[in-house]
Length: 203
Image (cartoon, rainbow, N blue to C red):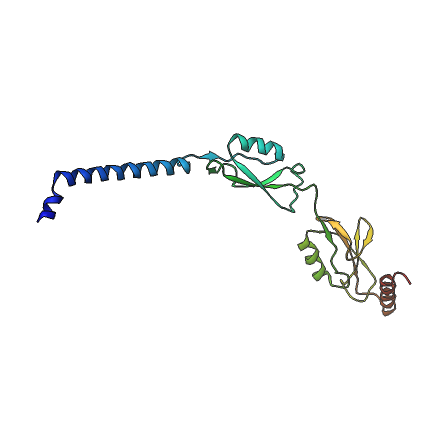
């Protein structure tokens, strides 16, 4: 009975009100701190950095209190200046918070160099998809006497013969020399002997 009387006493009610007041102040203080520390409702529109140099982009992002990080890339776009920005994440027009990191991809100085694959001796149906998938382009297709129709006998670039392992820039145009399916056995043997000599260094 005395405990119940204590719950309704002025001293207990006074302490209870003080405790509730302190709790309310703490809750509002915590919410205010969270709001200010997370930049609640603060939005910055990401600018377009396309074709900007890295120095220009850094100045622009510094003005908006944004950071950046460069991503490695083998991409090359001839429509963009060398070493300019060709891609960004987040994209321009999106909204982010202060101090957000923007990921940038720079344009290379040119197309990457790729090794010519081993397609001599394969059929045209096998060779063309291999070259195209690597980024090369197929140019002129010519034929010469050889018993196997459409077998790749030579690869040429700007009129010069190229061999597997040579390097050309991506998008280079490669000409194909194929068998016409009409060559005699003698001509086939001559071609085979020529290939053997080339592989042995012309001996």
